[in-house]
Amino acid sequence: MRVIAIGLLLMTVVGVRSARADCGTEATALRAHLLEERSRAYTWNSAWAIVYGSLAMIQFGLIAAKTNPFGDFDQDFKESSYVGGTKAGIGFLVRVIRPLELHVPAQHAEPCADVKALRAAVATAGRRERATFWLSIFGGTALNLAGSALLWSRRDFSTAAVSFATGVPAGPIASFTQPRGSWRLWSKHRAEWAAGLDPTPRDGWMLWVATAF
Image (cartoon, rainbow, N blue to C red; front, side, top):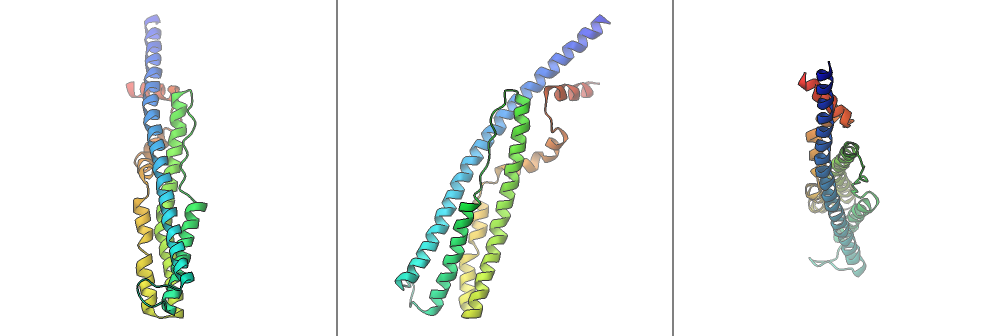
């Protein structure tokens, strides 16, 4: 009996140490991923805020100067510039008011508790990246359709079509240049993480013992 008890005790110690080692490795990888993804998200958000802000200022500036660098400053160009500047201005405000911000949790002393917090942070980041991706595509398309419909009603189909063709690519370009690493990582491990939401040393040992038997 003593031999069996000692054997079980050794199995428990090995299981706990193994779980802690695995948690430490995973925590390091997840934290490095989130730090890099947060940096990329900040760069992307800042770049597109500058792009949209610059486009808005250029188009409203041309209206103020009554200048068309491509031809005559007529009513078609003026109203197209108003619509284009407004769309760009909305894009700028979205990047300022609803930026893609990713949170990196503070480090826990216990590695497995750290993993739990980091997995949750990756899941949240993944959902935010997914929402921002589709908002840029569908929101941008809807905004361009609304602007083109207004121009069609006020001017003509040709003016509306040019406005739509020049404006609609911005949404997909923004989406496909956006960081999506957390979205991919979360999608890949979603089921696996859901099966082990509490990665504590005890859980690691219990899973290990169940596998052993």
